[in-house]
Length: 131
Image (cartoon, rainbow, N blue to C red; front, side):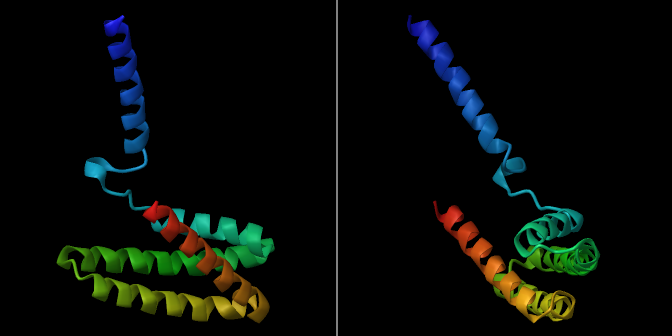
């Protein structure tokens, strides 16, 4: 009976560990998404939440991809130094440039909705990290 319980415990523990490591890269690090993955997922939620038409989606994808590539390059340059403030400042600068380019494409009303939804998603992500 003890052997059966041990065996079952090992199976359950292995399953849990496998599912936890599937969400992270090697050594517990988060997997960095490619700029293309970032742009695609961003446009997907924007399409749904903001009800973008196909032409607007294409323009938005191009802008988001451009700035996702910039973010990725800057993060790779600045990460080794470990200066979080410098990284945060650069990401804020890149986001501001992205927003400046997105606003004329989306229009004032849709852009405001975009920023609201983006902030809601950010808050939800931060709350999820704390749990």
